[in-house]
Image 1 (cartoon, rainbow, N blue to C red):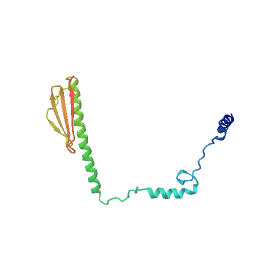
Image 2: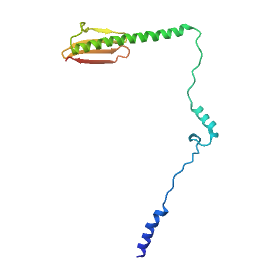
Image 3: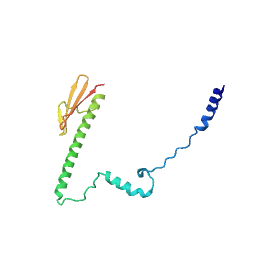
Length: 148
């Protein structure tokens, strides 16, 4: 009987002894705030970590070097534009051929070299097969357009 009274007393008292309060964190590390006088410490840490170097503002004295780089960029942009136009025209004809004979110009059945890609068009029994080979990387894509 005495043990039952002690256990009952313990069960009733333990919840009152085990109360918890709110957890409050005081930031001490300057990286997480704290004293405003820690600003120079944070700035020095940031400067030590920073690997970025500002680009120099020096300009070349000869204008021919900048025009040659602009010229090569223009040439590559022009080649890309021509390549995209050729692919667009072929795609348009493929869709027209697949959906109905509304185009008066049939698709060529030979290879077209755009300088960037070599495009080969082949008629097969189930439709048209387009093979695109990238001249620079050698990557090859095969697209089959079925007839409807």
